[in-house]
Length: 123
Image 1: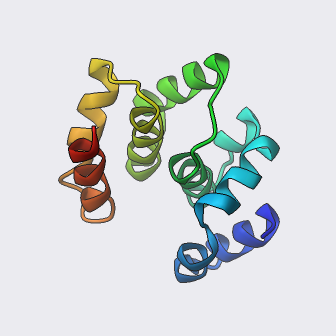
Image 2 (image 1 turned 135 degrees about the vertical axis):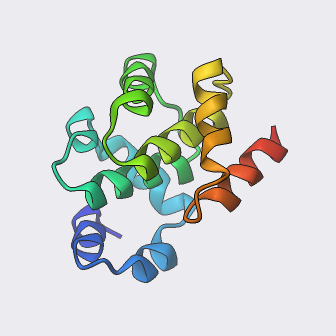
């Protein structure tokens, strides 16, 4: 699965397609192709996709990118992006108060609440 195809799907709001094809192995394959620039796309949906790829993947996120993601947990305009990025870091062992609080806040969101509960229970 190509990143561009997933971007096309989210721009059409076809999240069913994304959910069907964005497996851990696909996310792991896409991770090395993503850059910080992808996290700053003007489209909320594309940033949501990128955050979802980070969240689904189990690849290592380097320290520089982790710092960028942490700053976006505080500053991204779209709450779903903030929550998914927090869960991506939480999954990888970042349990700072900032990340834990963001994941706890996500519990009350109808779109990602069940995921947040899963991450909190898995820790």
